[in-house]
Image (cartoon, rainbow, N blue to C red):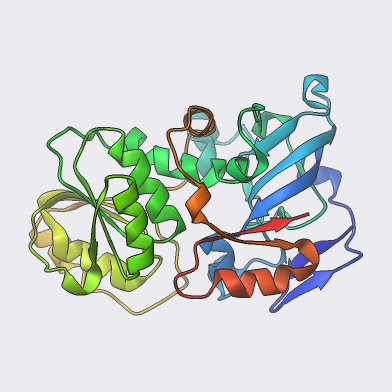
Length: 317
């Protein structure tokens, strides 16, 4: 099958072996996949992953023991879990000690003609959600996870750091709570999207560290973003860390102790809520798509996605 494979360098492989049954009992023909910041970080050394990249996808089920899924369009949760370890038994399957992760850890990903996942990982995409919207289910679910971890009130002062793909989704999700949300970023054109959505925005260059925000969500994908978050959050406030970055410079974490700041790591989230939000038209993804390229041009697509100011690039299989 055709695939985009990473093994110290990124290459297009026109004849990669089919995904092994060990990766899941359901075979899916991938239709569209999205390039994520995590994919770019893997190419810089994050997780030490080798194999087919990609974990944001929509596709058609070709074969599955769950016959009701065959022929359906689906997206899939990325953690493949054992169900038997102490964390799975404690209701924390996304932290399974034996997990593999689609396109990230010991499991080939979605930048290929086909992939495998367990049937239990899959969610049927309703007809009201098209393929390009469906690709956003996984990152949008990650945005909704924040609301499962912290409670926002209409008076909670919230700042989202980063005007990239994830930051703009997070801002739209947090806005639904009624809390005043502000996005801080580097790119005027992307911040202009926030104004379209009635979300306040501000250039990072014009931002002062005032230690006055109740919640700061770091979606910058950089160590500098976390450093800025520490300068914005109030004493006993909360930093939600959404960024995954390869190893960088050491940070002075003393402010977290001095100001008694809570830091929450936030990763995967509820697919059902994300699908429902897209079906209801509550999340605007159309302005985020800035490139569509075929799988054969996957290397060029990754290069495009890595350019400053570029939002979502899709790969059509």
